[in-house]
Image (tube, rainbow, N blue to C red):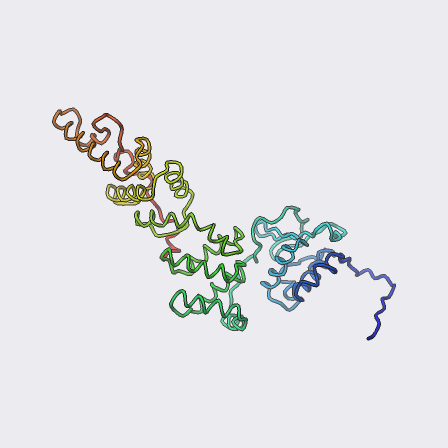
Length: 359
């Protein structure tokens, strides 16, 4: 076995690599990740101008997505920190790594060189533009059993073969949004349960889960649990299923948890909203449910009792001539306010903000 000897000459192109990296991090990492770390740190340390993720990929004969995968890996290992700020992609190395002499940082493809912020990234780092994968690239990726298995299982769930555009979008869930294959398959099942088979719609979910750093099926199940509660309400209102916006989420949380209504009461209010207005309206439903809450309604039988009292009050008012039929809805026999359809009839109409994605 030949012995190794080191020259004692000093060269100005040397860079200091930490013992932590050499002794602890490097043995556990694959070779591609090590290449990216060393090359990136060298450019960081030397303050190389006009530097970008694409430049790393070109220099190391890799895909840019592989560079991002490696950088995210080292961030998870605690050796560097990434932060995306608009079109800027920042990188800073941990205190155990020697700082570059001029305190300069790493930049994205469209950004100038800046000192790297110290705080940890709040969002998952992605390339500045989502890659466009050619059919040849997809065929190449399919040689990976993980990717080919993903496509095969997705086809089973969907009950149809995947077209080229479907495969490109599905692969982006793994390559660009950094979701695991298990999470991706759960995402597909989740979308299908909501009655939506559109890959564009699934992509919006993938982006949301990526931003919220959903890494396991358990995390995805916990994150989507509350949305499953909303599905029957949307169906009763005739609204396409989607992740609720802020108004919808706050309203439904209030009805179920603050007012404490059971689902059958909320569904009944939804049906009455459609029957009275001919369109979904969360504010109209709020008028009904707030009125029921004020009158301590607990069951559908309580609602039936209020309806009966309301009808009796209208009959009595007509006989006495004291209340017009149109305004009789303000009162029941005991002069207790019920719900006023006039007040809520033309407000809070649902607008499908994701209509283009639900086609």
